[in-house]
Length: 352
Image: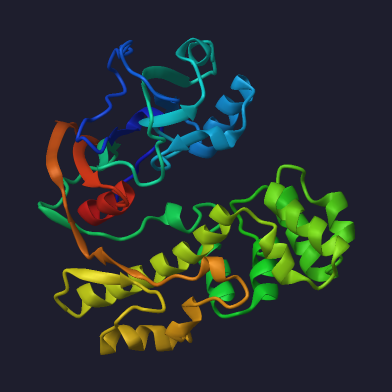
């Protein structure tokens, strides 16, 4: 019915700061010489770069720890995007020396406040949609989590999360190591399938591709401590482990939103399920079918991943929606969304 992201230029994401300012990808920015603080705030404009890899490359060029860089949220890879980042104990002159293909790092001002996850209001999108039909008219759209939440080429994050929540660390580790998908490189698929068959973690260290960094971390631990799957999970970064839990909460949210729409149930908010969530009868039934008791979100063997739960809007307002251009086989549209909402899910709703 439609296609997006043929080229990075087809998908523009501009961060809306906490003060409501949209960071245009085309603006000429100037530095505030009167500013003070130990964090250098910069605009990061990137094209066809994964956010985490871009930040890693910037830290490498600056010869600093990646932990010194703060950011408010990840942005799409196959896109042109803008966002604020902070770099602790950095002079603007040093940042200005960074030259990386398809990355612009523009110092704005010094601040005493580090930029952390969630420090944004939302995002503004300009998207080229290849379609011969017009989008449906709608002021609101279902607030589904997008495929990015689960892994586009390898959608397993929610499966790993479910295994952890269900108290099955071995299953979680084996899903992460061995579940393969057609979109992966052939050498990766073969490595995963071989490990699944042989279950020899020490030998797998020899043939698993070097760039599968987290897989190699798990294999190293299991080679040294056979059977210690809890310990293997513990050596992974906390942010990655939390992503597994959040992905499963997102999966449940999408299932509930689907059910709500299909059965014409009116709810303003739905739960991102945690051990303190208060669920309606139909929501409890969805968890029952998933075979997940709500108390399982209090994770005994990895308590730092436990989640109390919270609420998320079922529908979101499409702010400032416009069709900028319309040709026979494509449209260019723009709109803004609050933080945590997915433009790809909105496009799917508008054009399906």
